[in-house]
Image (cartoon, rainbow over all chains, first blue to last red):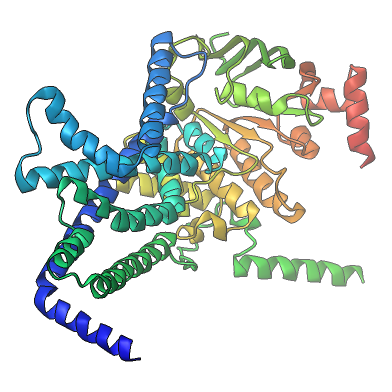
Length: 284
Length: 246
């Protein structure tokens, strides 16, 4: 109990002294995670679409070769960025590009931001590419056939029919990636990016209050991820739309065509019932 | 021959070593209602899917107004916009309402204005008796209702031919009637239709040409009265006797 009280007072002291730094760290983490998840999703969507463009032996050779090449490139991208640690990728890109080109595109604070954004985005993109591919192939092939049958091309089929359903299905995956990004952006400290965790490192470097500061970090990260998963669930509900629908009352004259066999038109149903009743009675 | 809409010539289709269609020949003229009947697995659906290029024929030709649609570089999407298809499993777009299902093709493919597309969609939804349900989603409808919406969606594209792939096979018996009567109406109004069906009464009474398929070949074809009353081939007689026994 005593320890808890002293932990509380330590946290209070830390917070009083460094609240702006912590909050700045939170905001950097969130901005980077949101932006990188968003861009990563776009990359993933693009790769997913490129990967699922159908081709038949009927198509010209050039088209088939290009599509095969595209699939190979996407495959390599996914395997490389999914299969190596993000912390190394950051180092590789941050120091590798100046090493090879002799020009440093990542100068100053904005350079660090740019590099962090690129690394986290393409990393997320590599994971999302597979999720999107899974989302697309999970949609009933009948949906594609229905779209093709009314003359839609591949892009129209994708944007109007398949992706809206696939994206709905991969929202849990996007949520996963977003939450992973909130936490894993912390490895960007290797290139000097000051987010929530790097803030903690800087602060404890001065006053050595490791545990109280780590407690603030834990609570901070948990709050961020809880809010994120709450919002994502709301988004899912929103995309599912309403469970009920309203019948539209239309002009009775306008519905005459075809309604003779319409089971849900009350008047129609009534008339038919009367007819059969009458018929039955005459026979009796 | 120029008066035909669709002409299937020596069409064959194999999945690997498995040959499912062999040397299919028949012609669809404007206003024809052609029924394709035969046992399950005889290749009826594959034939229809080849005609709509959902499957690529292995050899042979399908002529649409005299042009071979199976030729390399033929614009399949433009062709499909003119040839409607109704599926056994409806294939309505699950992410859209009934009305949107009937509008999306007109807007995206035919480049119609939203208001025109809406008015047109409403017209056909009224024709199939689904106008009150325009705000419903496919998952909220019964099978028969879904199939009527699917027919309206195909009609809204104002196709020259409408292909039906066993449109009533996935329906409860009491829903078959509502779909068949919509199709009967279409036939009366002069719609050109090619129908793969197990509804023998429909084939006999509504269509003016019947194609009987067995084991991937056309066994016999002709006017329904002829084929149903005086089948020439043993296979046809056997198939039809089973149907009469029921």
